[in-house]
Length: 420
Image (tube, rainbow, N blue to C red; front, side):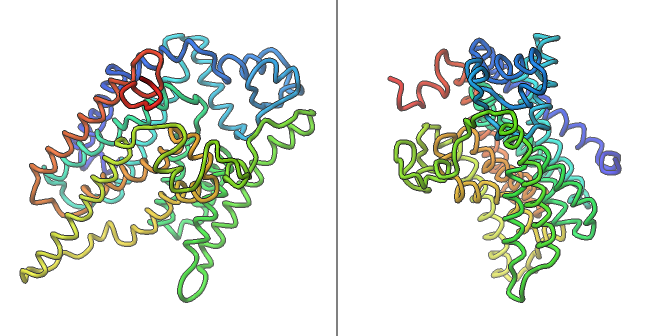
């Protein structure tokens, strides 16, 4: 609240930017694409949750079912956390009572608002000096760039409605920030990690592996990081096990994909040949520019600031030290990007088959890095260049969202190599 009081105008413009960007994404293409998808059966809205409503807990065990026939044949999917399914069940009930609020739409908006919310929290913790007009403008434009990412909106409109990554990423980002900025608050970190494990136990364990990597130092292992890693892995295991155990206890056969299949170690090359192709050329074709544009923007941004510092140093000017707010930020970014890196290493075939889901774990950190770099580095000299570049990128995003409302396609027909 102190930040909002001290930066009233910026805070109001930030919330207005979030509202306008979400509204434009919805009006230009997301709303129509979601309405088209709503006519097709969905495994939560049309199968799983009606089974929950019409059968006692002792028969369904809060598991997921791909079809009514699967439930009758005692075949269940048990890879989702129960807590997350209950959250989706609440959205389902909202849709049943207010048809204008479909769970696909309300879930997507909740996910993107959570990203905007954690980013605003980071800004409130890192901005300690006067925010110049140039900095404020670039931050707001980069937030619009982030919230208009077409991969998120197209995935939310066309693909799995039970995709946990966007919402879980907000938990992960907050934990990464606390590990970086508030290492002494071990109790708060422990609570955050446990909550993360409740909603996404598998990725809590992945976070634990990333923390183990962080614990490796030249002078030995960092004991604090090791304790956090053990907690994350342990909590992930504890909160993952109930679903498969309940499935076994109720006599269900699992429809989960096996580890070997997800890792690409089953030898089947139908969907996957190697880890590089799973990222760059996945089995399900997605438009690479939606990945390349933000990545190239971030690399250009970082290169610009580093080259500017080097030029000033060579000219005899006092070199600009790393802003205090960014000291040690490499740990934060390591934990943010670790989810995508670890997933690509552990389950590359899953990435190849579902890039529309896993891409968010890459792009979320990229956009947060873009926003924080503009917020915490010294104001760029080439302000007009960066404004125009961001406006171009936002326009590119909105164009892709608008094209995604095409009838009968997942991605726009012009992008899809399988369409004429």
